[in-house]
Length: 278
Ligand SMILES: [Zn+2]
Ligand SMILES: [Zn+2]
Image (cartoon, rainbow, N blue to C red; front, side, top):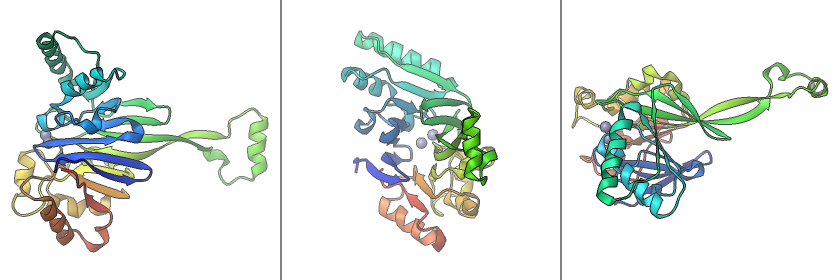
């Protein structure tokens, strides 16, 4: 049951577990990053960058443990990005744990606001987006950078491109493509606050409640998404794949899959899927 699931799309693999209130941590080994750390699970220890959505324990309790495991394996200093209000308390926790263990660890905690961007690697950028939850929270979008023929040269004969080169110009320009977004815990309104997220090639989004066993009002009260709110918005989401995470433990995996099969419109059955690692 605790075995991380693996799923891949568009050249990226996703390895992890997500179960509401229990654990959420999904690693992208190709980018050496993990979205949230749950209690500090073995499949994330090899990652360099950790993008923490918010401070609820099912998402973030493992930060000290990940740091200690990485130190034990002599990994390089890990970077943890998180909502800025988490940074000082997390430093204090590490400080106190350092006193317990008689050892101070190396780590970087970087506090972020919504709509901040930073460079992940030569080929990738990360940008935060606002989410709506019971405590300060952020979603993360990963953009792939690539070079393409300049817009002003598109459709022109190849001699024009050669002329630009001869003038010492670079006929290409940098473009970005939004490859994956991760919501962490949020109400459905993140789609209104950050419309760009709906264009992510892959959208990992929470859907905690899936049927009438919980009401939309109760989903909102707890800062979560109900499938009843998502279904009418599916047309507005342009993603190739919508991967639902953080389903409630009141549904077994089989039940959750059966509910989706029953409730999703037929043309969405291939596009919307439940992440099977819980
Ligand atoms: Zn949660
Ligand atoms: Zn939460």
